[in-house]
Image 1 (tube, helix red, strand yellow):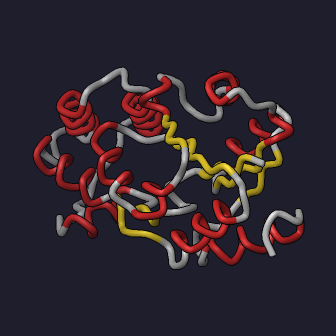
Image 2 (image 1 turned 120 degrees about the vertical axis):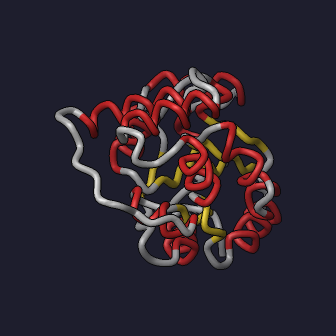
Length: 205
């Protein structure tokens, strides 16, 4: 069986909103009055960034402009670097146990060039057998094509994949491909949730 993980909110803690990112970077969150359509434009920009369609400098500049310059591109870069907060407890032990049980492991994450090297520096992420991400595949969850590309690259059928993600649309899209997808609650420790799901399926003792 192939056990596949999202990274942010599953293996690694991340900031969940802009104010949290500002706090992690030690930057005053400030008061911003968004113009109409701000959230949609921000989501579109982040998706482009995570598909590798815009580089780090371009993303920082465009996001600064979206905030009407209230945060400079340099400050946006600091917030972006601070977005990853560290691993959840027990992740490396879980990956080690899965590999000892004979399961292949992988990740499929929406992320960016600026975060990828930091994520690969996490012991649990580094220990996975296969590393796939949106900016490498040029596709973005929950687009069905990213799941298809993942299957094709690894030569597996959806019925052979157990997948953990913390976002409902990503889980539903994976289920439509036939993956055994489980939604994880990122607000509490994630490893006990995953161990329980794996034991129920007879994949871990």
